[in-house]
Amino acid sequence: MRIVYTGGGTAGHVFPALAVHRVLEERSPGWRAVWIVSRKGPERDWLEKSGVRVSPGSSEERFRSHAR
Image 1 (cartoon, rainbow, N blue to C red):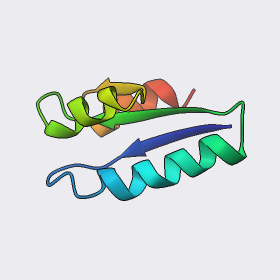
Image 2 (spheres, helix red, strand yellow; image 1 turned 60 degrees about the vertical axis):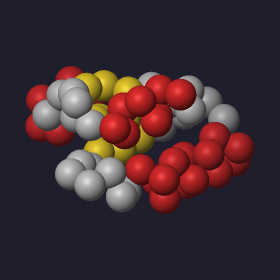
Image 3 (cartoon, rainbow, N blue to C red; image 1 turned 30 degrees about the vertical axis):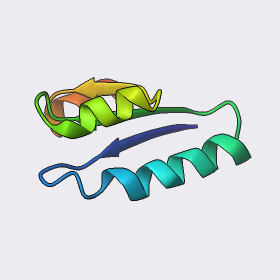
């Protein structure tokens, strides 16, 4: 299973989605996830420090590359 997280603007989505991400890690081993983040937003640093795979760029361009 693959999951792509995306959002942006205020970064208010990061912490609730990170909590969901942690639960999925515990309950469903073997899946892959990537977080599409802005190139300059604070969420990139927060997620990288949490050990989450991030992919900076626009949601549209990044989603296409990870949805294959």
